[in-house]
Structures are given as C-alpha cells and as structure tokens.
Amino acid sequence: MYDQNLAGKRVFIRADFNVPQDESGKITDDTRIRATIPAIEFALKAGAAVMIASHLGRPKEGVFDAKDSLAPMAQRLADLLGRPVPLRKEWLAGVSVAPGEVVMLENCRFNVGEKLNDEGLSRKMAALCDIYVNDAFGAAHRAEATISGMARFAPIACAGPLLAAEIDALGKALRSPARPMVAIVAGSKVSTKLTILESLASKVDQLIVGGGIVNTFLLASGARIGKSLAEPALVGAANKVMSAIMAKGGHVPLPIDVVTSKEFASTAKAEIKSVRDVAEDDMILDIGPQSAAALAGILGKAGTIVWNGPVGVFEWDQFGHGTRDVANAIANSPAFSIAGGGDTLAAIAKYGITDRISYISTGGGAFLEFLEGKPLPAIEALECRASGASIVTA
Image (tube, one colour):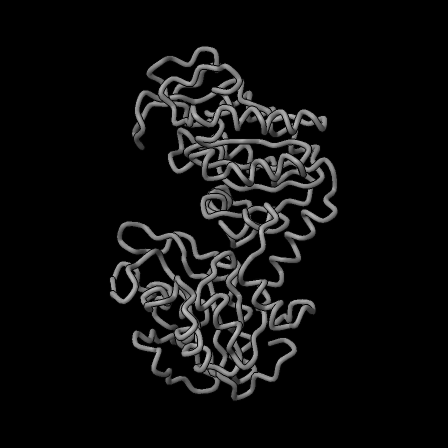
C-alpha cells in the first residue's frame, strides 16, 4: 500500500475482526477493528476496490452459522468509516466491488479448506485480487489459507501497517529491552502457557504470574489454596520456572494476601485474607491489596513491561481490584510497556488506560508465540515472497 500503486487495483486485506461479543452478539471491544482502519482508509483514498476478510470463532467448515457471521463487524466498520460496508456471503466465485468501494467477505472459516491451508482454496482466493495485504497480526500464528496460503499465490503480497507495527514493537521489547524487564503472564491454566513461561524465564528479570496460574505456583511454594483452580501435576514445572528466574538473580513474586470466595459467581462475596489463612473451601479469585502494592513497586522500577492477562477475575468488580491496581501501575510506570491478549485489552479498556500503554498489541496467541520465539506462518509466507529480504510493508 504505502509503496504500492493501488489505483483501480483489487486489494484483498486479511484483517482480524475476531472480536469479543456478548450473548446478544453485540461487540464488546472493537480494538481490532479500529486497528485496521488506517490500512482500509489508505486503500480507499488511493482508489482501490477493497475486500476485507476475517475469521470469527470456530465454525464448522462448509456450514453457515449465524452466530459466527461477520454482520456485526461489517456494521461496526461501516460506523467507523462513515460509509456502507456490504457483507458478501458467497464470494469465492467472485466479488463485485468498484474502485473506491469496500466490502466485507463473510467469515473465511465457512470455506472448506481454510484451516487446513488448502492450496486449491488459497489459489482460488488469491485470484480474486491484484494485491494481497496481511494486516491480521492476531491471526499471524495460524497457517491457514487466508493467512499464509494466499500470500504464496497472490500477484503481489505484502504486510499491512498494523502487522508491520506489531513486529517492530514486539521486536523492540525483546531484542534490546531496557532493564529490568518484567513480564506478567496470567491465565486459567499453567499448561496453556507453560512454554511461554519457560521461555520468558530466560529473558526477563522478574516474572509475575496471575489468574489461575498463580495458584499452581502457590501450591509449588507449599501454600494452601483451598479449592482454587490449579494443576497439581505441574507443580514441578512451576518450580523449574521459579528456579530458572532465581538462578539469574530474579524471582517470581507470589501473593501474600488474596481475595477469596466460597463460590464462583458474579454475586459472590469477596473476602481479603492472608495466603496462610486460605480455608479448604475457599477459591482464590484475585490478589489482595498488599500483593498488588508489592507488584506496583516492581513495575514502577521496570525498564520494560510485557503484559498478558489479568491477575484476577476482573470482570466482576469485587475481584477486579488487583487487576485495576496492576493496570494503573503499568500505566504510571516510566517503562516501555507492551500489552496483548483479549482479556488484557478488555482490562485496559475497563480501567481507561489505553493512552498510557506504550504499545497495545492486537494479538493473543500470536503475541505469546512471538514472545516465545516461535516463527509465525504469516511472517514466514511474506518473507518467502520477498525472497529472503525484509518484509514488504503496505
């Protein structure tokens, strides 16, 4: 785009509009949609015929399901652009769109072969455009037809401004980070983030764990966690991560006080107590104020902060104080801060600190895999097209 002649060209932009919705289908966070606006507007102003594609959820291929339709995303994009964005349901055989117009293509995962990166499907979709633009960092870790397949067969393939910015920002955070480097990794299970925890243990100076993950680490430290979500089988893995950090002079700060409840519900009563006072029928759903203050002290002295995941069940206010305090500490820190992941974005929005985070990544799984050092199929495909040269940016 920025260095391409787009006038009169058919431009296929692979975006990531896999955004959270409530039970009625209303979009609850449009960060990813807003993030792709620069690429779309640039193409439209240049006189391109623009097609936007994205996935949503995990529908069964070949079967249309209204709950996974991109209709709400097309409407939201239309609101943001101030122009109509028609939704094309049947688009593999061809797309009617004139220069200066934009259409959204229905959920690409409705197409048989999308997730398997089918070559035939990739070639068929690539034939729809003159220029393929990947601006979907949130899906960059997927080897799928609209991600890596089309990049192989489109006449011209390049990265969009969002994808390029993501790679630049994440690279800055990892290549030569300002020290101390602090990472916050939270989630429900250690097993889903064990490899990233192990990888970060060799890179960071302090590793903060939160959410359900911290319960396994507390268990490894000998603390009582009641009936909290934990993975006893991974206590050994948690100990290895803590040992790896300590071996290089850092540590994994664990809570000294927590917020507990007897039930897991939005109406549950919250009780602050010392970790040593956690009862057998207690569930740990947040960190306590003393623990939050200790983490704030660490974050205030950091040079680089990488944040993925809230430290408690922040969706319910009585269990959101820990995440709120950590979020504000990151916002107030002079460190270069980079945050990513769906729940993290929701927490940033809830506590109103969007403008105080150095860089907000639109990626979840891609964000983690990049931090871990894994190759991303989207990037590999574009680098392959560039014959080993730097990624071509839109």
